[in-house]
Length: 345
Ligand SMILES: NC(=O)C1=CN([C@@H]2O[C@H](COP(=O)(O)OP(=O)(O)OC[C@H]3O[C@@H](n4cnc5c(N)ncnc54)[C@H](O)[C@@H]3O)[C@@H](O)[C@H]2O)C=CC1
Ligand SMILES: CC(C)CCC[C@@H](C)[C@H]1CC[C@H]2C3=C(CC[C@]12C)[C@@]1(C)CCC(=O)C[C@@H]1CC3
Image 1 (cartoon, rainbow, N blue to C red):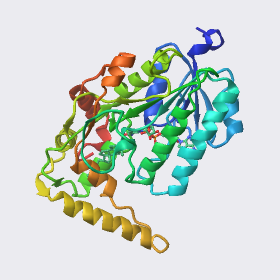
Image 2: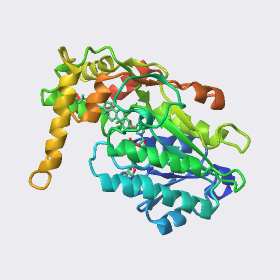
Image 3: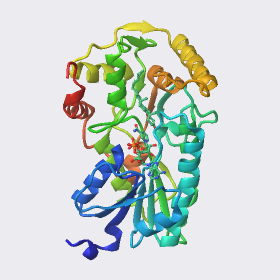
Image 4: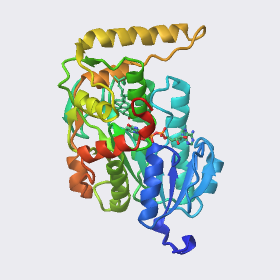
């Protein structure tokens, strides 16, 4: 069907559509017959049939051009969580999201689906089968989490049935899959530097890792089920694989799949967390003189040594969500997609 003939509710814009999740979302939307445009600060590849708008989401004018005749917006742009740049996070995740909301309202967009994060409730201590009713983290563990909280609040508060502007937030956790720029590449880099020999803590902590196609499925379901009379308006939803796994079993499976040794020796969690905190402080203090980025940040150590898995019961009930790819299958497909990261290549 020619783009201009598609019904208005099938015309969408993916803000952050050049990123890992964004590109998978764009591909699935195209498969499902949507007319798709992308707005991103950078263009990694050209996707046939997709109009690309290059710009910063803090620039309302640039956004407005991209929003012309669009009724559905997915906002999945964010600076990389590994960055330590507080100003960048505040500018993009808070002020930028405010700009996205304003531009959407002015352009007459009907639905805004935000990619939030399950980490908005994570404070570095155990979460077991956490529901969406958990309070936001009072002491967010880093600037990324702090600004994701503010971003989610802004989007959910903007939901206004009377004005015909509906919003919803998807909270994925530990997304992995082909083309992921962080989880597998960081893991392999750490292994290649001989630093993946140790298990932090006793190794029994359960976490969620979510295959990217399940996250995409959750976003599209949310967009399609979001209606003025649905319970979804202005609500957050966990989207996971619904198969919590031991953090260190998951890491080991990926490492072994790529030809590396699984970590074996245990280190006490408190010791590693303390060291990571010390290194982080040192990096902060020395920043004007020398710049170094520790691999084991307090956030990563906390994620590696605690339970953090979430219930997606609400998504099942309100939007009929069910993962479409199992964890086992997701790991196989992910490992196959990284031939260049195999040991010896
Ligand atoms: N990767 C993960 O495990 C998880 C990710 N998320 C969220 O999912 C979303 C997507 O994450 P990923 O695809 O992993 O990240 P990514 O880094 O691959 O993609 C983010 C995209 O946003 C774009 N972007 C950044 N700043 C921008 C700006 N000022 N204006 C326009 N575009 C801008 C980037 O160019 C990039 O293409 C993010 O909101 C992230 O917070 C949530 C939970 C887990
Ligand atoms: C060096 C090792 C101890 C850990 C290597 C793997 C990590 C890079 C990843 C394990 C869990 C991942 C994760 C995220 C990023 C990559 C990991 C830390 C997020 C912080 C990405 C953004 C979110 O919203 C939450 C994610 C939680 C899990």
